[in-house]
Image (cartoon, rainbow, N blue to C red):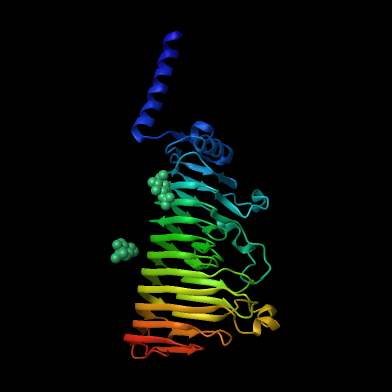
Length: 404
Ligand SMILES: *[C@@H]1O[C@H](CO)[C@@H](O)[C@H](O)[C@H]1NC(C)=O
Ligand SMILES: *[C@@H]1O[C@H](CO)[C@@H](O)[C@H](O)[C@H]1NC(C)=O
């Protein structure tokens, strides 16, 4: 009996040493913590056990999720952790279909309070939204209860998500809130064009966020930049179908923080409802947020309905809430220093440039330079429309002619 036991111990130790030596870090494989990967059993407890062990380890510990299907109930991967964490996901994580499994939780996979995290490995977060999209009444009702977000980064720092896929979220795919130094790089985000509120990445109250070389095809905004966002980079993003790359919606709540410093460059939008957009609600109370220091540059539009649009009359509901007294007042959000440069391609509507600013706070410092947007119908010219644009410049190629 003694020999096999010694042999076994030796093998186990050897494997462990090899892993540590090979990867230069400690590995916490979820299947060693009880995850069964049969696509049926709730594996969340095993994931949390692996996370907590890794979180207490120094250096660069990795929680490893091998290939396979893991059913995961809502989980919070909480920090602070001792080292720089990695979640190496090769498998597919599946969210519960039944909303009851969320027990009031607003998100499915929640990374909270972590400083230093890498999520990678080629795997998939499958939100399994199709079974609940019909329960989402947010597109119609202002006071709706949102469905759960797939991936939340809340109060995190120094986080990179790369080489993973987010599929069919129930609500937003990724939300980044109250965080700094976050990179989303080479990520694939996908949901059907008619899936409601499946925004790709929503950023709010966060700074130094970079979304690069990422493909987003979804039913709502590919990227949306909400209040309190600063120093945001969106580059090498292909968007479509979807509602485009949007700043906003802003101006719905008093005391919202500003959006300042956004650079969107080297992006392609195809078949989207909007290209690059700033949207603010009508009405609203002061103090309102300001939007400034935005650059949209080197962008290709393929059959986009509103390639360049500032919309300060935003109200998506056809219901009474848009006819409410306050919603008839002009937006109080101030937009200034916004540059649109080298934006070309095909517009699916004739008004390719629409700068519809607020009578209560006109736009300042807009720039249109090297714009070449042709109408999808050959031989028909595109147009630009301006309202309440108080100052700006236009230069270079200007198709349609500038209204600034
Ligand atoms: C993020 O963490 C890595 C690994 O510990 C470190 O090398 C890097 O300097 C950190 N970056 C920031 C911005 O804190
Ligand atoms: C533009 O984005 C594509 C990915 O869509 C990337 O491969 C390319 O390197 C980017 N170019 C620049 C100049 O950033």
